[in-house]
Image (cartoon, rainbow, N blue to C red):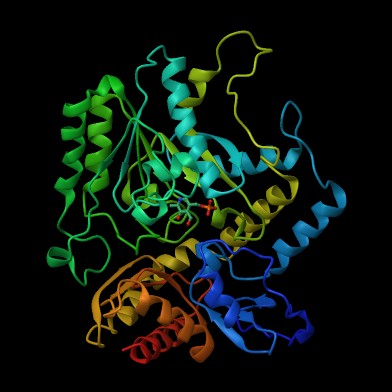
Length: 448
Ligand code: PLP
């Protein structure tokens, strides 16, 4: 993969940045010194001045097939010209069914039924609602409590931030959903620092679910939701055996287990889904991002057959689940999804991530010893590097690193507080892994 990027017209740079209130951004700082990209190809973004910026983050953990891949671009173009939009309330179109079947085939076990949404946040809220409605349908409507986890990120809907465990995403938004509890997070630097892959220590933290069950009683608990690898909080792989233990406790107490696979899906961990890597089949699985390699908004939930079937009762003309979005199974997103799955399959990209995992881990762990590096975690093609906060407070060093990486080292990087995250497209070469890590090292030195 050696993309050639042609400099685009620099006049694409906007001269008025005021109107766009940017999401999850430091708007005022950005607008003083913008970081704009105007094109992309393969592993790179292109700036208006013609700089090639290597993508260390797969956009936002989504462009797993790399950028502007021809088969995906063509599929979207063709679909836009053929069928621009079709509702999926009481009508639909063929690509929706084909994509659902392809996703069901990709998901492990009897995760066989796909409900489409348009983002990870919508996918999460959909999964939580399916969990609640499932117990209603089974005549066990007292099971309403939802259990999330500290440091979990499940998007920004009210459901997602309620079960999520990142305080900054919660504190400004009132009381949120009631009837929510949280497992402890699984990170302990003293016991896990600089581990490669899943840390040895921490499986017993799943037993905290037993404590929560003892407190509330299983008859009040609908579901537990976790990210198999917590991503947005700074890449926390699950301790060895943790997810298996969570599954066993959920089974014991008739509690649904939801895996939020929005970033772990589509090859990030070297398998189609984390469920496959860990040999644990959840009852509901969310997905988004990589399903279209970021080319069109799409998310969704894959449900195990018995969950789905519990809804298929009553008169056949009645709607079984009162939920859905205008753009559920949007034709452009479905076409993008189908073409993306073809690219993943034809290029063996999930296996490629697995093959590169050791080299990637070696390279990133080579940054140990640089100033301010407190911990490094790697799993699949994802890494988190914790830096010590600056004296002025948490987040400043991470922010400065992201800015320096883009302007001075031609690299797009994702940061969470003072944690720098690497999650390159799965087409990354070993040479480009070396380049990314070298640039990361220079960035860390630049903010020392
Ligand atoms: N769930 C997880 C695990 C995520 O990482 C994200 C986004 O990063 C989301 C949900 C939310 O996805 P979106 O931003 O598409 O709403």
